[in-house]
Image (cartoon, rainbow, N blue to C red; front, side):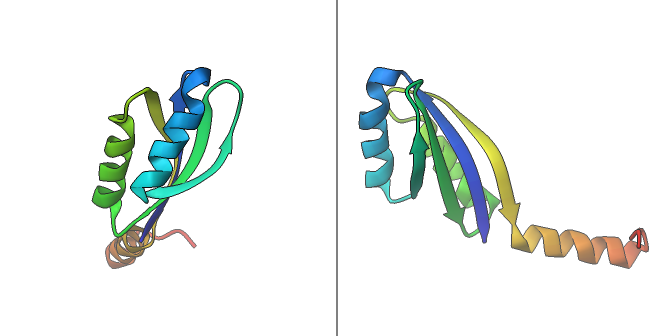
Length: 93
């Protein structure tokens, strides 16, 4: 499971229409918007590839100027990395 927070940037006049498009895709949740056209969104996906596909879909929407990934957490990847570190003996206690 991957959970990510993104900021979608649009022109202030297009904020409501972009939010409507994002909500209709059922890809994520919209949490915040401001007068400057910034929209804070969280995404969930099975893995990093699914999350990046959702980011690309939002980026390609009409009136979206920019999408920035602010935070991403992937439970499986963290577990795999820890196993790799423990196997190599590089873990710092």
